[in-house]
Length: 254
Ligand SMILES: O=C(O)CCC(=O)C(=O)O
Image (spheres, rainbow, N blue to C red):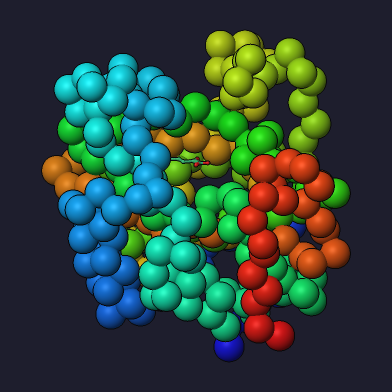
């Protein structure tokens, strides 16, 4: 069973994220990598394509050059027991209990995927908070991002604004798709504090659902893979009738 040191819990509370280095073994990452590459090559669904996210740099349609470039292997927990075992493992359950509360559940409706970032046709993700399309009683969820290989600026790692999970923003600070507008002076000032979340294989980023984050395109030679899952305390229910309540939660072992 892993647990965070008190200073890591304090960092999460203050900055909205914490990175646990080498939390997953090399062997486990390699098994997940091989599996993800096999599912990607065989286009095993459910999938999300770059063309569907429509982010800057994405192919214009599924029929355009690179249109069938996969962005996410969805429904990771149902896809293969290997992903579910990792996502519900004591390596994550211990730290998540410290961050969220005693009864941690995995949401199958959010993230629950392997993110793939292809060098030839990847898009950039604008500044946003994941909670924008999620519906829970409280905005208290944590996502867990496992790097299955190196993640650096060159291949499109995440960028974070430390402490932004505690900030309040006005509706006008977001665009129509609820991305945080990087063209406004007041937002630009906030974004100046951005920091790259550089990871190596086996490193795990825990981040709050209100944390502002973004990511660049993959300009390296190889596809980048990361397994990403989202959690909440059992007392924080998804709102009935919303996408957040569309799939059953998976309780993590006590
Ligand atoms: O790797 C990326 O492009 C970022 C993905 C992301 O921020 C998200 O899915 O919320």
